[in-house]
Amino acid sequence: MEIILILLLSYMCGSIPFGLILTKLFKGQDIRKIGSGNIGATNVLRTGNKSLAIITLILDVFKGYLPVIITYNYFHEFIQLSALMTFLGHIFPVWLKFNGGKGVATYLGALIALSLQLSILFIFTWITISLIFKYSSISSMFSSFAVLIVSIIRDNTIKAIDPNFESINDINTLLFIFFILIIFTHKKNIFNLKNKKEKKIRI
Image (tube, rainbow, N blue to C red):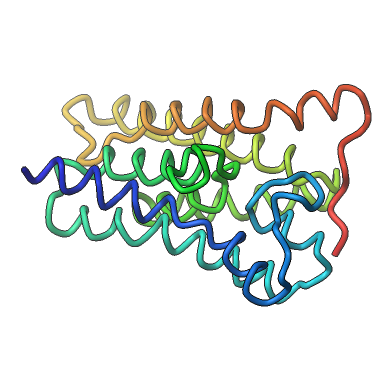
């Protein structure tokens, strides 16, 4: 019963389309008909309203964080399942015929609950790459890959020093799944990058 409750609550929380709701309420527009058609903060920014984009980003991060931290505190053995279901809720929301966002902000929220150090690495890497290349898609894919690699190196280094070390929260498999899903949600961006049609970040 507990696992079913966690599955449902994590998915439902992740599936809340804040970008769509906010643009409907405050601009009377359907974000799915603007720019890339994505419901995330980057596309909300294309409406010209920076405040809505920032609020969307914060709420998408928070909805990734909340169910995972609750699961961490009360049902620790299901924390990775909660993180995955929250992420899947965002990219496959039942309310939008399973056509959601790219999941990067929600991924970050879940990552904050799982590892503060890795979330800081993600933010630092994302900002650095975005300043260099000006593409949100490249920043997101590279940052999630960097988090995965650093996490693997960290764990292997610790195990080399202490063969008896066992990570309480081994998330490398989960991070690999996240990385693959982020690549999947950015498949259109990869196509656009290849054909030099990808839109740069304009702040």
